[in-house]
Length: 434
Image 1 (cartoon, rainbow, N blue to C red):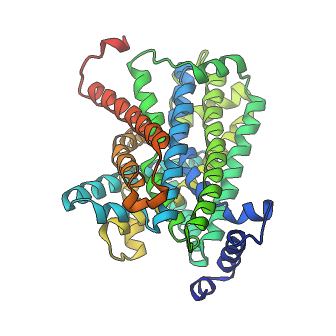
Image 2 (spheres, rainbow, N blue to C red):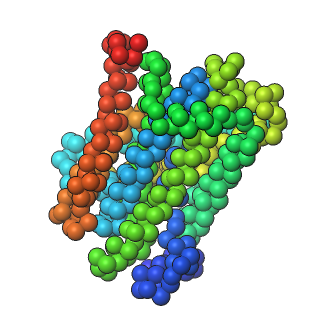
Image 3 (cartoon, helix red, strand yellow):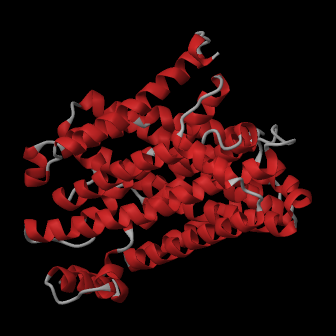
């Protein structure tokens, strides 16, 4: 218990509560609440400003037509986040550490570079989102909005020193703000609920541009850094003594993943529905967050625009903190030795400032960052699938046939969409897209 006490009173209380649950001395809601945290933090990756950019484009240009992509992406995300959490709980190691231990050095180097690029693309999207929000609210230049966002992010991350619980509570509060904002938007926007329900379950990709946005949605929803991060959040949250305790933790973890990512999925679908209801008829060319904000005021009123801006600010701050946490964990996991925390944070944050300094269009940068994330996603997905089905690593918790099949199908879908995107990028004609 010495380590628990040394890391702070809040951490002590949370881990003591978890131990009481594992020992059977807590039940009901008092057993659930101490277990909540890792999936809530990971879920912010599915409501970051990159989602705002791709979902606005999807709704404005294609109406409700790409809602099915959001739903499928969210289901894939649920499965892989659950597997990532399981990896950390069962092995006590995170995905980056296992990659370093299990794979040949050249492959580890390639995965590290790819993961760092993904972490940088993540921070680009998230810092830009916060900066755009501050720019719209206070008329700040985008670069200074980035500086303020970085300072707030650093302030949030300082709560890590007090243990995992304060940071979980802060991120949880910001997730609640985002969800509440989009609940309000659904009462303001004139949503066609029948069309939304139909397109949530009936797939269609009407042209090549729809494929690009669909891949962007996948990249904004199933994110490499979130897959790495979740295993790190669960690996040492509560030391376990036997397989019975691991099984109990996994049960709580799976429930949390389902609830947290269901909320994230509903928020994403609400973003598309709001954009479709507000922009699709007559404003289909709305593709930028700034334009969406300014256009919402005359269409749906100042209230809708203000709620949109509040959700964007909450998303930018929370996802910047989570993205930076993931970048730190990925770097340390792959290199295998301690790196000063300011170096890890600087490496992850710096490219975002370079892009803004070069004057790149903010929303274009957001969408491109999501495509980069989608292209870097297959390696951690495949690695996670490989590790979690190995009995020598997972023991009795290795994936069963149904889980293996579902995870393989999800990874195959992502790989297929990525292949289509690459063919489009290099100008290869795709007749089936029309």
